[in-house]
Amino acid sequence: MASTIREAKIFTCTQSKVLAEKIAAAYGVDLGNVITSTYSDGEFQPSYEESIRGTRIFIIGSTNPGPKNLMEMLLMIDAAKRASARHITAVMPYFGWARQDRKDKPRVPIAAKLVAKMLEAAGATRIITMDLHADQIQGFFEKPVDHLFASTIFLPYLKELNLDNLTIASPDMGGSKRAYAYSKALESDVVICYKQRAKANVISHMELIGDVKGKNVVLVDDMVDTAGTLTKAADLMIERGALSVRAICTHPVLSGSAYERLENSKLEELIVTDSIPSKPSSKIRVLSCADLFAEVMHSVHHNRSISSQFIM
Image (tube, rainbow, N blue to C red; front, side):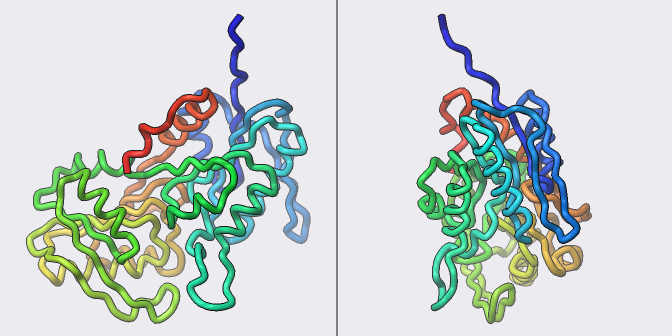
């Protein structure tokens, strides 16, 4: 008699609830019941209000700063481990603290490595995430990591735009690999911006490598924080004769004056996913990553290949 696989349960951290509801609906189950108690000093305690013993559970939560989002994920994992869950998969659409993936000067931490170790110490048995800031972060884990690419969401949208003289652009040298992957899929040219920073989030100088005159340009990046790089690049490209400039960025961190910069910029639109909640804006178009995560989670639970999701 063939054994049947017990259905997984899906839970969410507080800040990812809207996305988690979409993922659960696409997966075909209801979100699990979790309540969070908060003390007057800000300390909080999540509690599973249903049995998870012997079950595979998925905990959905992006860990963008501040530290509460990461701490909530760690507490949810620890609680699941102590409640005897069989498999605990941390589904992190946005893996926060990933920009600190190496020592770029003396006496600084490697925060991405530290976060990986904390997740494993808490009890995570698998990680599912999307568009890491640096691919090598996968190597910080001793547990399996499914690193998904938002290109499966963005490429169909870009093809529907049917832009003439399309050129893909990277806003910095570090993103050139991603830009070349998109250009190969879209059979387009590539240009690269070279920038120098005075300090974090402050650009002192930017130059353009390549020709954008008469082109419709699409900037490609993994995240947009203050939007300083994107808006400066867009302005530079319009000055150099580009017909239009769009940007696709997987994770809309959008801190500081980002929304104001976007509204005042030469960007036609900024296309993002809902890995992080964003505020409405006339310049921002949100494409949901819920179906992508639901499909991968379902395949992982039923021990099926997910290689079709890795098109980049």
